Image (cartoon, rainbow, N blue to C red; front, side, top):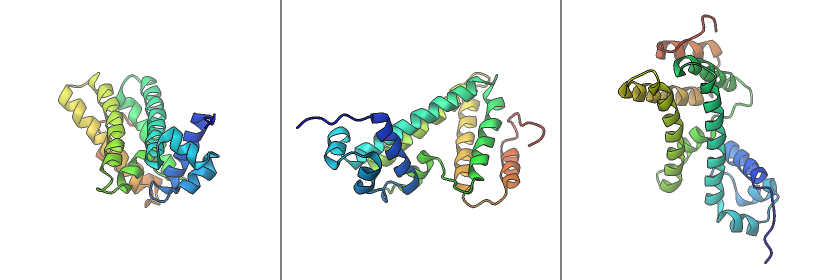
Length: 190
């Protein structure tokens, strides 16, 4: 059987959007076939199965997120200065009418304890994000403080990503972030 040639990045982009918006469980192989344009056999040959495609989609999304995060952190002199801008982006996203939380956060919350391997895969990607925050905080803080600040940021990001579905007030989210993260360099006016 001849191997089908396809643009892997486009396939991953389509699969990522499906898994992200529908969730792992609700994304059927038929949906993946329709969105990627690949036949089921090609998906199985290239990715092994739905789980393999999901993992590669998570990796694709996580790498894009890490690249964007690193680029943003590099624009500022410190993480404490960069993070208000990053968090405000998340708040702005949560206020959109078609809001769909972070793919990693949604997946972590969706996957059951029976899906241990997938849950661990998501957790590893989230730890990479936290490690990037930790490394950034480590430039101006002790190791213990950097670790605590990275954990605090992850808690607040999860909060914004999840609470964003329920909040009807941008100002309420911003006030909560200011109260919970007073050690960040918040701009005077929000």
